[in-house]
Structures are given as structure tokens and as C-alpha cells.
Length: 508
Image (cartoon, rainbow, N blue to C red; front, side, top):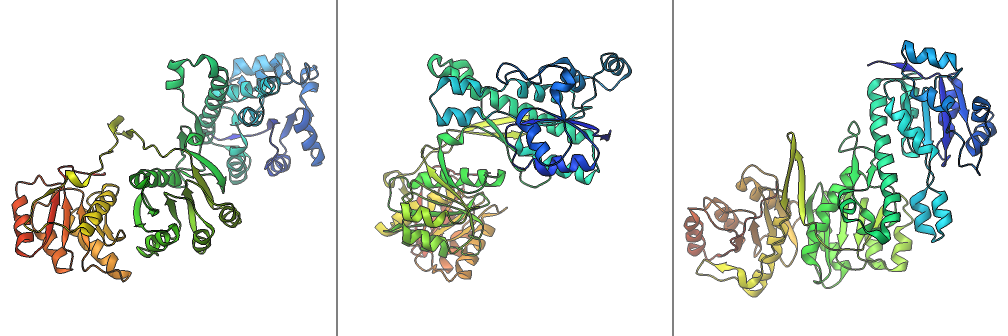
């Protein structure tokens, strides 16, 4: 574990929000604190003793603050390995060991977003801070580094729980975050300078990265690499979590199926749609989507293909949700929804679906094209004596879109453009169908006259038989089983319609 006690700290930050508890804890733990400029004044105003870096270096802050910490007596204390040779050199040159470095960089990206004044933007390129981060992260075996205000809470918890000590695992995790912060920061600066040159090799290979609060679970660290600002405008709420992002991705992929169509609402939970409905108004669509599974909707991700008006916002405001996504919000709707500060509101800028899917597995990665096939009426093959009615055909296509975005094995049951039941992630298609039927009955949704979609073929007629007994009278499926005829024969014998798409939509 290699625990190390923090005896000294260098603090030089832009954002002081959340810093006071750390400084107060360090003072209680008798840590010597070094600081500069505004951070030094902030600490002094807390009534806590702080050593000025310029007293350590014997050099004042010069060049309008451009040079404050860039000195061997600072970087020597950070970079020195805690071994005999290096420690001897520190003693020779009267350089104190620095065990903890806390930095928060100048807000370069915020400055670029708020002004076109090039001189002001250039001044927000942090030099000393980024150097401190890299030096401390390089020497993580001996030094703790806090590279941004996002890590203030983390280091406060560690130093509190471990009584002023850190383990090697703590220091290495913070070093990883540090290089992520420096990579992101340098990328932002590169992108600013590259606006006119547009160097393609770097534009394609460099990705923004952000540390998330945690991964799927609190004991897992999470990161996002990409540019969310190109897809959404965040209008309200807290920072998105790892799980939020995964659900938002699933929600965007599904709502894309209904782009340009009548008002459609989707309720997403754990990457699966638990409610989907298309209606004449967005309020009706919301009410019908929620009716599909009002229990699972709690804490879900909500998404619409059309503007949220006040009536819909008022209805939505009655339940707890994590994120609400829409192409736009009427001003009075936005005002109402924004009163709940922790609920995230996203305005969609770009409806384009993801073109590639990447997954990290085993000791590598798999990549595939996204499943962007959407079947049209003229592409369906009627394989039974009974043809679906016009309304059944609409529901079959609706159900097929839903099934495509549910985890396999899956069945989607639809009636009147509303997902009334679904089974997903099951080891057998029969289980998926039975789960879907149970869901519909649980919430009092009618199965008689409904249709169902399957993400893959039926190897036996058991599913169509179960569906028939519940009043489901039309089926859409890919086909392709050597025993397709068994299901077709059952449908013919019982007056059911079946169409085949020829396209399987597994989602693992």
C-alpha cells in the first residue's frame, strides 16, 4: 500500500470553491502550506498560516504573474524521489520536500467561449499550473497531486479517512486524473490555434476527456472522451454521470427512429425503453409513454422528438427523473423545469446517430457499424394468408423500432403506437414474451388486438401460440430459421398475420 504522510503542501488554484475544507484539514494535521498570489490571500483570510512561495524561492512573482512557481526550489521539492541521493541534494540546496500539490488551471475553455479577445484568451493559457500537475503526477510514488477542483472532494475524503496519509493506489489514481486533465487542457488550446490551419491528423486523433464523478458504481472511476457540446446544450442540472451518459446514448439512438414523425416520447431506464408512445400532442405522448411502466420511469431518462411545452413540463414535473432531453423547450416550460436544480435538461443540437459502435473487451476492442437499418412498409414480406391491416402495419413498424433498441433476447408488444409491454435481456424469447405480457397486465394495458415484434427469428411456434392466446394478432420478425414454416402454419391456422423483415436486430 506504501502509505505516506502529507507533511507539506503547495496550493496554487484558480477556483477556490470547495478549497476551504481542505486547507482547514491540512492546518489541523500540522501540514506546512506554501502558496502564491490570490490563493495565498484566500488561505490567510481563513486565519491559517501559509508560507509565501516567493519567500521560499527568494524571487517575487514577475511578468504580471506569468512566473510565480517556476523555480528549482519548487520543482525540486516536487520531483525529488524520496531516496538517499535526491534527499541529499534537497538538503544541500535547502529545498523542502513537497508532498501534496493542489492546482486548478486558468479557465481557458470558458474564456474562449466568452470572448473573442485574443490577448485575453492567450493570458488564460496556464504555464506554471500545468507544469506543477505534470511534475507531481510524474512523481506519484511520493507526491499527491490534485489537478482540478473536481478532485477537491476526493482528496478531502482520503486525507480525512486516512488521517493525513495516502496510499500508492490513491496517488496513482490522482496521477491518472492529472494526465487526463493536462491532455484535455492541451487539446483545448490546440483546437483554438488549429481553427484556421485545420490539421486533420490531430483533429481526428485528439479527443476531449472529462473525469466523471464515478463509473457504473462508486468504487469505479469513470471518464468521458468526446465532445458533448456538439450534440447538446445543457440548460440546467448537475453534471452527467457515467450511467446517465450510457442511458442518454441509448435514448438518442431510439428517438432518432422517430425523427420528423408525430410527437413521440421515450422513457429510458438502464438503456432499455420502458415507455414509448406517439400521439397527436407531446403531452399525450408523454402520458401514454409513462403509462407503459410508471414504476420503472422513476429516476429515468426522458426524451422527446419535439418541443416541450408548459402543459407537458407541468406533467413531467410531478415525477422524479434524472435527465430530460428535447429539441427545444418553450420559455415558460424551461422556467418551470429549471426550478429543480439537480434535474438535467439537454437541448438537442444534432439528431445524427452514432455511426460506429466501439466496445472494450478482453485485451482489446471490437468495432462495428451502428445498426441504422429501419424497415419500410414496402420492404416487409407478408408470409401468412392473413395480411396486416393498415393500423396493424403501423404498429408492427413501431414495435420493430422498439425491439431494435431493447437488449436481446427481446419482444416488444405495441398497440395504437404505444409500447404496452416488453421483455428484454432474456436467455430465451419465450421468457421475453412472458415478461412483456406480465408487464402489460401489471399496468392494465390491453393486449387484445396488439402486435408484437421480435429481434430475431422464432425457431419454434411457441411464441406465436402464447401471443395468440393473449389476443395478439400480428407479428413482425426477421425470419431465417429452418423452422420458419412452423410459426407460419400456426398463424394461418389461427387467423394471425405475420410479416418478415429479413433483418435481425440483436443488441448485446
